[in-house]
Image 1: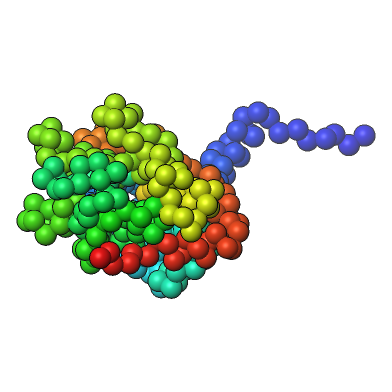
Image 2: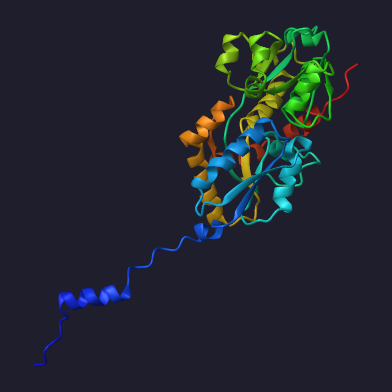
Length: 356
């Protein structure tokens, strides 16, 4: 019988040593991003909330994204962040190196059929939202309007950098409830409107409450402003303690214009407020490969849980209340399924019409 050769343990070990260690599994996402530069295109001017979150993300995001690319921030303000959304959707490279930081109102405006958005919100690939903001109407304490009820009989001059919260809600309140907000359009950002308030050009604005707290806390501490109403479906605890009513508190038969039923009016406001829960989303274009989108989404949620990022943002008076990309994708799909008659009506109702 022929003997079967059996290699010794020593010989086998020597052979394996010659072959070297097993090759590590390739990571195509890390390989792609290594040495790359990723741009976050901010749809608003420097100094505002969108810019603050984006610059904080640029400082901390590389640790969580495979390949640890460099991240830079570029501001592309205009049309309530729609200019930036249009650019990232159809002009920027569709490879995962360009991210947009835009308003939560932008996708809803597209869904309503506004002419400015040149994108399909359902085809955008949403990475997540870093915060869910409560908006607020507020004015100087020297204005005739001291409460939201006063706005039904007296005009308040508000600045707008919309179409976004600053323009949509004054218009919706005027057109559905009959308030008398006068809106001065064309400002580039919330900080520009606040400067206009200090210069006497306007009396106030509709804006996220966190923006007010983080940029002009002295206005609150010194009682320089009157907060008229909260713009949200759920109350902000601080504003609630201050006794500030919810905008939905006024969507009643007492205030809704006779040509609308209360149910119709409520559906219009709820649609807009639901869209605004998206608040401060990050998004990439429709052509970005799925594996990179998945990596970006995972990195985004890791960023939102990063203690250093949270501390960095909180130093600037901003909260971190993340919504995942998958949740956002589902919310956008639900908004897009809104009955057409409601969307068509709201499309007209959020447009500001001059008040006499």
